[in-house]
Length: 134
Image 1 (spheres, one colour):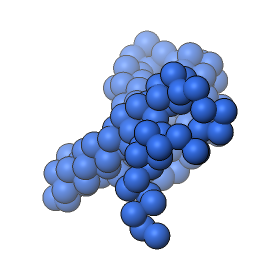
Image 2 (cartoon, one colour):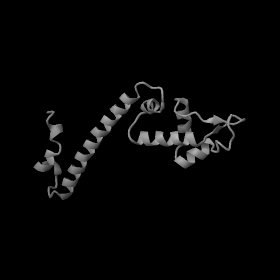
Image 3 (cartoon, helix red, strand yellow):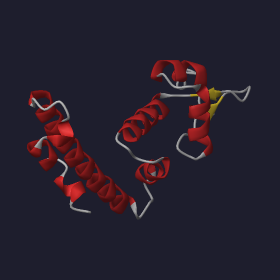
Image 4 (cartoon, helix red, strand yellow):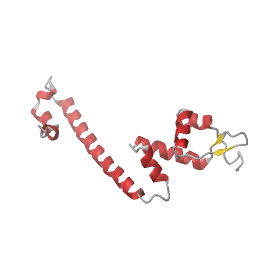
């Protein structure tokens, strides 16, 4: 077992620094995303490698990845890694396009003089793809 000097942070320390409840870190451990060392008393001790993994998990979740996808991404032996990552990139592209459309629609609504924005012909053009389903 490595010394506490190499694994200086407790679960509480890490949770406070990354603004997460300790049960989230414990859950990530239970699903195999984290593997903190244990001290002689069995308490979790997090070192730099675990903290980096936590940062990757947080950033990936913020980008819309599931814990399952993150697990594949962090598994250096996962054969489906590139497939999962490509699917995530495709999803990001789709969501970015939706955000672009939403931004354009909102900007138009800010400039439009119509009190009921749904009656504005140019505003309706922003939802034409949805209306085409009817």
